[in-house]
Image (cartoon, rainbow, N blue to C red; front, top):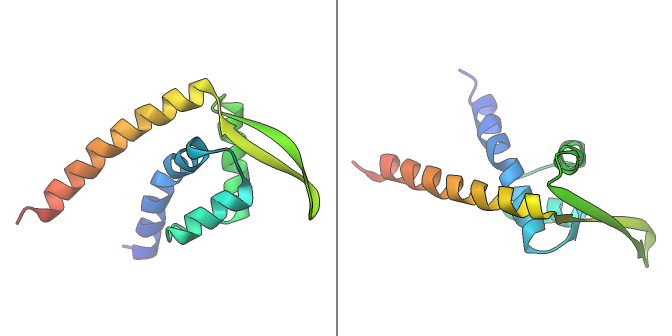
Amino acid sequence: MDLENTQSQMRKGVLEYCILYIIGKHECYASDIIDQMKEARLIVVEGTLYPLLTRLKNAGLLNYKWEESKSGPPRKYYSLTAEGQKFLQALSGTWDELSQAVTNITTNK
């Protein structure tokens, strides 16, 4: 069995939730999302993030707006739609249940 593949699949499984959670705290630019993910040791690269952001936007969960930047081209800032907020709330409930279940299994000796 390939350990790296299994670890990668586990990370991918929570990637969407984490991205929505970050955007749900405040509107943000893609590099802000990448920085927060790296800080949490959940590495994501632009080639993974941008298609996911596009998919979430096309699903009606995200909005974006362009803002001028003082240090380069305009930046696209993402925020949750009302549907995105509801979706995130449902995912949060699922995550809490799943996290508690895994903790129960892995800590009961």
